[in-house]
Length: 255
Image (cartoon, rainbow, N blue to C red; front, side):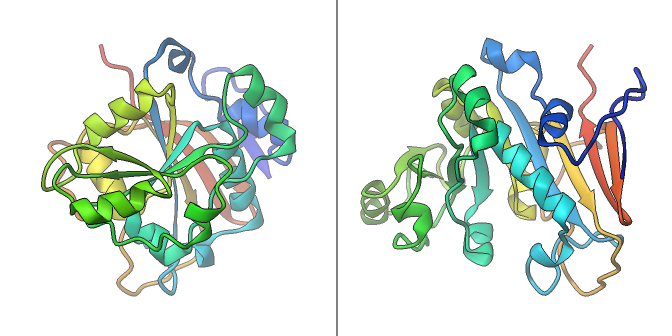
Protein backbone atom coordinates (compact mmCIF):
# COMPACT_ATOMS: atom_id res chain seq x y z
CA UNK A 1 0.00 0.00 0.00
CA UNK A 2 1.52 3.31 -1.08
CA UNK A 3 0.53 6.78 0.01
CA UNK A 4 1.05 10.05 -1.82
CA UNK A 5 0.50 12.72 0.79
CA UNK A 6 0.59 15.75 -1.45
CA UNK A 7 1.23 16.44 -5.13
CA UNK A 8 2.97 19.59 -3.92
CA UNK A 9 5.62 18.23 -1.56
CA UNK A 10 5.67 14.63 -2.83
CA UNK A 11 5.96 13.27 0.72
CA UNK A 12 5.15 9.67 1.61
CA UNK A 13 3.96 8.11 4.85
CA UNK A 14 3.09 4.70 6.27
CA UNK A 15 -0.69 4.28 5.96
CA UNK A 16 -0.65 1.27 8.31
CA UNK A 17 0.35 3.64 11.12
CA UNK A 18 -2.45 5.39 13.00
CA UNK A 19 -0.09 8.27 13.76
CA UNK A 20 0.73 8.65 10.09
CA UNK A 21 -2.94 8.53 9.05
CA UNK A 22 -3.78 11.13 11.69
CA UNK A 23 -1.19 13.44 10.13
CA UNK A 24 -2.58 12.84 6.63
CA UNK A 25 -6.15 13.57 7.68
CA UNK A 26 -5.49 16.37 10.16
CA UNK A 27 -8.06 19.15 10.11
CA UNK A 28 -6.86 22.55 8.89
CA UNK A 29 -5.73 25.17 11.39
CA UNK A 30 -8.81 27.28 10.75
CA UNK A 31 -10.90 25.01 12.99
CA UNK A 32 -8.91 26.35 15.92
CA UNK A 33 -10.10 29.83 14.98
CA UNK A 34 -13.78 28.89 15.19
CA UNK A 35 -14.47 28.25 11.51
CA UNK A 36 -16.24 24.88 11.09
CA UNK A 37 -14.80 22.39 8.60
CA UNK A 38 -17.13 19.71 7.26
CA UNK A 39 -15.55 16.49 6.03
CA UNK A 40 -17.48 13.60 4.47
CA UNK A 41 -16.36 9.98 4.58
CA UNK A 42 -18.08 7.67 2.09
CA UNK A 43 -17.47 4.43 0.24
CA UNK A 44 -18.58 3.39 -3.25
CA UNK A 45 -18.04 0.62 -5.78
CA UNK A 46 -16.50 1.14 -9.21
CA UNK A 47 -19.91 1.77 -10.75
CA UNK A 48 -20.76 4.43 -8.17
CA UNK A 49 -23.10 2.46 -5.92
CA UNK A 50 -22.87 3.48 -2.27
CA UNK A 51 -24.42 0.28 -0.88
CA UNK A 52 -24.22 -3.47 -1.39
CA UNK A 53 -27.24 -5.49 -0.30
CA UNK A 54 -28.62 -2.31 1.24
CA UNK A 55 -25.59 -1.54 3.42
CA UNK A 56 -22.19 0.13 3.03
CA UNK A 57 -20.49 -2.69 4.99
CA UNK A 58 -20.16 -4.94 1.93
CA UNK A 59 -18.04 -2.30 0.18
CA UNK A 60 -15.60 -1.88 3.06
CA UNK A 61 -12.21 -3.42 3.85
CA UNK A 62 -9.80 -3.54 6.79
CA UNK A 63 -7.96 -0.42 5.54
CA UNK A 64 -11.26 1.38 5.01
CA UNK A 65 -12.28 0.59 8.58
CA UNK A 66 -8.90 1.80 9.87
CA UNK A 67 -9.33 5.13 8.12
CA UNK A 68 -12.96 5.29 9.29
CA UNK A 69 -11.72 4.96 12.88
CA UNK A 70 -9.06 7.62 12.45
CA UNK A 71 -11.51 10.12 10.94
CA UNK A 72 -13.85 9.60 13.88
CA UNK A 73 -10.98 9.93 16.34
CA UNK A 74 -10.11 13.35 14.88
CA UNK A 75 -13.68 14.72 14.81
CA UNK A 76 -15.67 16.68 17.37
CA UNK A 77 -19.01 15.49 16.04
CA UNK A 78 -20.30 12.98 13.49
CA UNK A 79 -23.30 14.16 11.47
CA UNK A 80 -25.50 11.38 10.11
CA UNK A 81 -28.97 11.01 8.62
CA UNK A 82 -31.71 9.13 10.47
CA UNK A 83 -32.17 6.72 7.55
CA UNK A 84 -28.53 5.67 7.82
CA UNK A 85 -28.81 5.34 11.60
CA UNK A 86 -31.71 2.93 11.17
CA UNK A 87 -30.23 0.96 8.27
CA UNK A 88 -26.70 0.61 9.64
CA UNK A 89 -27.62 0.07 13.31
CA UNK A 90 -25.59 3.05 14.47
CA UNK A 91 -23.94 3.02 17.87
CA UNK A 92 -22.20 5.81 19.77
CA UNK A 93 -18.56 6.52 18.96
CA UNK A 94 -16.04 4.93 21.29
CA UNK A 95 -12.96 6.40 22.90
CA UNK A 96 -9.66 5.21 21.45
CA UNK A 97 -6.64 5.04 23.74
CA UNK A 98 -4.26 5.88 20.87
CA UNK A 99 -5.90 9.30 20.46
CA UNK A 100 -6.73 10.11 24.09
CA UNK A 101 -3.78 12.45 24.70
CA UNK A 102 -4.25 14.31 21.40
CA UNK A 103 -7.95 14.80 22.07
CA UNK A 104 -7.27 16.14 25.58
CA UNK A 105 -4.66 18.53 24.20
CA UNK A 106 -7.15 19.79 21.60
CA UNK A 107 -9.85 20.28 24.25
CA UNK A 108 -12.01 17.51 22.78
CA UNK A 109 -14.22 15.02 24.59
CA UNK A 110 -12.92 11.43 24.75
CA UNK A 111 -15.02 10.56 21.67
CA UNK A 112 -17.03 12.54 19.13
CA UNK A 113 -20.72 13.09 19.64
CA UNK A 114 -23.13 11.58 17.11
CA UNK A 115 -25.58 14.15 15.71
CA UNK A 116 -28.60 12.61 13.96
CA UNK A 117 -30.53 14.67 11.42
CA UNK A 118 -34.19 13.68 11.56
CA UNK A 119 -37.26 15.63 10.46
CA UNK A 120 -39.80 12.97 11.52
CA UNK A 121 -38.02 11.84 14.74
CA UNK A 122 -38.76 8.24 13.85
CA UNK A 123 -35.89 6.93 15.97
CA UNK A 124 -35.46 3.91 18.23
CA UNK A 125 -34.78 5.67 21.52
CA UNK A 126 -33.99 2.35 23.24
CA UNK A 127 -31.03 1.72 20.93
CA UNK A 128 -27.47 1.89 22.36
CA UNK A 129 -26.90 5.13 20.45
CA UNK A 130 -29.22 6.78 22.98
CA UNK A 131 -28.81 4.56 26.04
CA UNK A 132 -25.05 4.00 26.10
CA UNK A 133 -23.27 7.02 24.57
CA UNK A 134 -19.95 8.14 25.99
CA UNK A 135 -20.90 11.64 24.81
CA UNK A 136 -24.62 12.46 24.81
CA UNK A 137 -26.17 11.99 21.38
CA UNK A 138 -27.59 15.03 19.57
CA UNK A 139 -30.71 15.04 17.41
CA UNK A 140 -31.22 17.85 14.90
CA UNK A 141 -34.81 18.38 13.81
CA UNK A 142 -37.23 21.10 12.70
CA UNK A 143 -38.98 23.71 14.80
CA UNK A 144 -42.33 22.26 13.77
CA UNK A 145 -41.51 18.63 14.55
CA UNK A 146 -44.22 17.00 16.73
CA UNK A 147 -43.92 18.37 20.28
CA UNK A 148 -44.50 14.98 21.92
CA UNK A 149 -41.78 13.35 19.82
CA UNK A 150 -39.37 16.20 20.58
CA UNK A 151 -40.04 15.82 24.30
CA UNK A 152 -39.41 12.07 24.14
CA UNK A 153 -36.15 12.54 22.26
CA UNK A 154 -35.12 15.23 24.75
CA UNK A 155 -35.17 12.65 27.52
CA UNK A 156 -32.26 10.73 25.97
CA UNK A 157 -30.51 13.24 23.69
CA UNK A 158 -29.80 16.93 23.20
CA UNK A 159 -32.31 18.38 20.72
CA UNK A 160 -31.37 21.13 18.25
CA UNK A 161 -34.11 22.72 16.16
CA UNK A 162 -33.25 24.44 12.90
CA UNK A 163 -35.70 25.38 10.18
CA UNK A 164 -39.37 24.61 9.54
CA UNK A 165 -40.60 21.85 7.24
CA UNK A 166 -37.04 20.68 6.62
CA UNK A 167 -33.85 20.95 8.62
CA UNK A 168 -31.89 24.15 7.96
CA UNK A 169 -28.46 22.57 7.65
CA UNK A 170 -26.39 25.80 7.57
CA UNK A 171 -28.11 26.88 10.80
CA UNK A 172 -27.54 23.45 12.33
CA UNK A 173 -23.83 23.50 11.48
CA UNK A 174 -23.59 26.99 13.01
CA UNK A 175 -25.17 25.73 16.26
CA UNK A 176 -22.71 22.83 16.40
CA UNK A 177 -19.82 25.24 15.82
CA UNK A 178 -21.13 27.47 18.63
CA UNK A 179 -20.69 24.46 20.91
CA UNK A 180 -17.03 24.41 19.92
CA UNK A 181 -17.52 21.49 17.52
CA UNK A 182 -15.68 22.87 14.52
CA UNK A 183 -14.23 19.53 13.36
CA UNK A 184 -17.29 18.05 11.68
CA UNK A 185 -17.50 14.67 10.00
CA UNK A 186 -20.48 13.34 8.08
CA UNK A 187 -20.91 9.69 7.17
CA UNK A 188 -24.02 10.33 5.11
CA UNK A 189 -26.10 8.73 3.98
CA UNK A 190 -26.28 9.80 0.36
CA UNK A 191 -29.38 11.95 0.81
CA UNK A 192 -27.94 13.96 3.70
CA UNK A 193 -24.61 14.33 1.90
CA UNK A 194 -26.48 15.60 -1.14
CA UNK A 195 -28.23 18.23 0.96
CA UNK A 196 -24.98 19.32 2.60
CA UNK A 197 -23.25 19.62 -0.78
CA UNK A 198 -26.16 21.52 -2.29
CA UNK A 199 -25.97 24.01 0.59
CA UNK A 200 -22.26 24.59 -0.10
CA UNK A 201 -21.25 23.17 3.28
CA UNK A 202 -18.95 20.38 2.08
CA UNK A 203 -15.28 21.30 2.51
CA UNK A 204 -13.73 17.88 2.06
CA UNK A 205 -14.59 14.44 0.69
CA UNK A 206 -12.80 11.27 1.78
CA UNK A 207 -13.99 8.65 -0.70
CA UNK A 208 -13.07 4.97 -0.53
CA UNK A 209 -13.44 3.23 -3.89
CA UNK A 210 -13.94 -0.54 -3.66
CA UNK A 211 -12.76 -2.70 -6.60
CA UNK A 212 -16.28 -4.04 -7.02
CA UNK A 213 -18.95 -3.70 -9.69
CA UNK A 214 -22.25 -4.05 -7.88
CA UNK A 215 -24.92 -2.92 -10.38
CA UNK A 216 -28.43 -2.83 -8.89
CA UNK A 217 -30.22 0.34 -7.87
CA UNK A 218 -28.03 1.52 -4.98
CA UNK A 219 -27.78 5.32 -4.71
CA UNK A 220 -24.62 7.23 -5.50
CA UNK A 221 -22.75 8.75 -2.54
CA UNK A 222 -24.53 12.06 -3.24
CA UNK A 223 -28.16 11.43 -4.02
CA UNK A 224 -31.48 13.20 -4.55
CA UNK A 225 -30.23 16.79 -4.38
CA UNK A 226 -30.05 19.56 -6.94
CA UNK A 227 -26.68 21.32 -6.95
CA UNK A 228 -26.80 24.99 -7.90
CA UNK A 229 -23.56 24.45 -9.83
CA UNK A 230 -20.90 21.82 -10.37
CA UNK A 231 -18.43 21.83 -7.46
CA UNK A 232 -14.85 21.17 -8.43
CA UNK A 233 -12.60 19.42 -5.91
CA UNK A 234 -8.83 18.95 -5.83
CA UNK A 235 -7.10 15.68 -4.99
CA UNK A 236 -4.66 15.99 -2.07
CA UNK A 237 -3.95 12.38 -1.10
CA UNK A 238 -4.34 8.85 -2.42
CA UNK A 239 -3.86 5.47 -0.75
CA UNK A 240 -4.03 2.08 -2.50
CA UNK A 241 -4.36 -1.32 -0.86
CA UNK A 242 -5.40 -4.57 -2.56
CA UNK A 243 -7.19 -2.66 -5.30
CA UNK A 244 -9.03 -0.33 -2.90
CA UNK A 245 -8.42 3.38 -3.41
CA UNK A 246 -8.71 5.85 -0.54
CA UNK A 247 -8.96 9.38 -1.86
CA UNK A 248 -9.08 12.75 -0.18
CA UNK A 249 -10.42 15.80 -2.00
CA UNK A 250 -10.64 19.40 -0.80
CA UNK A 251 -12.75 22.25 -2.07
CA UNK A 252 -10.42 24.81 -3.67
CA UNK A 253 -9.94 27.97 -1.59
CA UNK A 254 -12.10 30.91 -2.57
CA UNK A 255 -10.27 33.79 -4.18
